[in-house]
Image 1 (tube, rainbow, N blue to C red):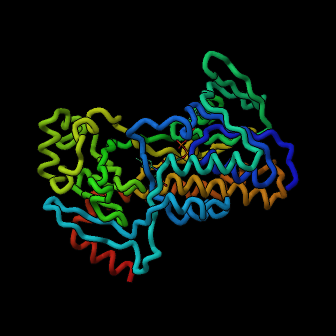
Image 2 (cartoon, rainbow, N blue to C red):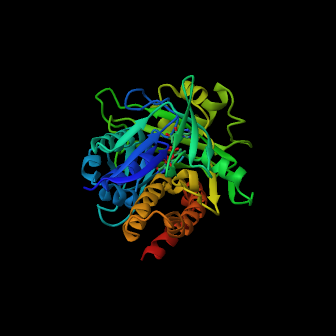
Image 3 (cartoon, rainbow, N blue to C red):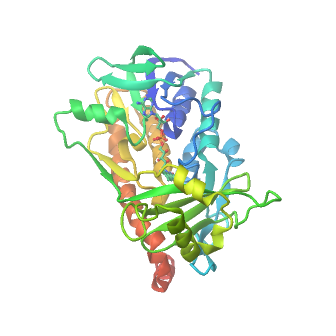
Length: 385
Ligand code: FAD
């Protein structure tokens, strides 16, 4: 493998930044990756932030391109359909397809990102710098300023791939430096989420069918559950921020118990620390980010930084992984000429990202409400026939 001389910096060692670093290193690039957080391989992530995710075929394809799908398999639990739970506790499986192979896969965020970082480091071409907070960027001079503990650090780059997530400081700075202030839009959903923990039983076994994505659809709100390799499930309760059943109204133990007794009775007894989880775990925000322009000078936005979506299609990470593949395809097609590369990537990805953003918003209504309508199942059968 020939070494390439470009000075590449990736901002953000999340799922997208870590995969992008690996893919570039495999093509001979030396890459420095900076992240404001400590390394999850050494310090556990705080509770409450999407512990696990659903990996779909777009994401699997990207992992395959990076040669890590086989290693990732041990982290994956196939989910072959939605298991709908009604308020009476009856369960109905809605398969994703007629073949067993038609599945999405539950994967731990920490497990997957650790694998990608290990593989990137193993190339010998990627260096990670944790606890480096990017404070500002200079798009004209190709440098950025980090704070690391008490020190200010100045970094120069030829090209930067900014994978710094939905709240991207890069995107905010691009907006400030852009002549067109409407280049980016960010819409917060009026619903939020909270994670709850369903442990394994006393024998270490799953307490629900592990090969399904569990859904408790309740029209205006819903809960979902994804399995983890340890026999536990991560449950995520999605509710409006305000209104009759909302994070605002469920603000005391008695209201919480009333809600779970009426709507989630089949699962309530399986959540040993319901009050602790609900009142101590953070309430997560959900939003959609759309960008008209994904790059400025030598800095390109990727992943959630360019196109955060609400999680109801389970496609945020998958779509970000596809961005990484698009970067590599564009590099290959241009014979590794970076001029014009960022425009090519934006052209290849932007419409798809916007379409996924729309579908993700629509799917919230499907998952929490439409699946409760018997006509919906009939329509789906006709649609897939
Ligand atoms: P992130 O994962 O947010 O990583 C950004 C990184 O940048 C972080 O490590 C952060 O520390 C670092 N960073 C940020 N700012 C700075 C700074 N100033 N300086 C230095 N470092 C910085 N997607 C799916 O595909 N399937 C799912 O099932 C799914 N479920 C989800 C469930 C929930 C509840 C949520 C909220 C999201 C879900 N997603 C899912 C979406 C998925 O989490 C994101 O799309 C994915 O994490 C995006 O990866 P990323 O690397 O672009 O950003």
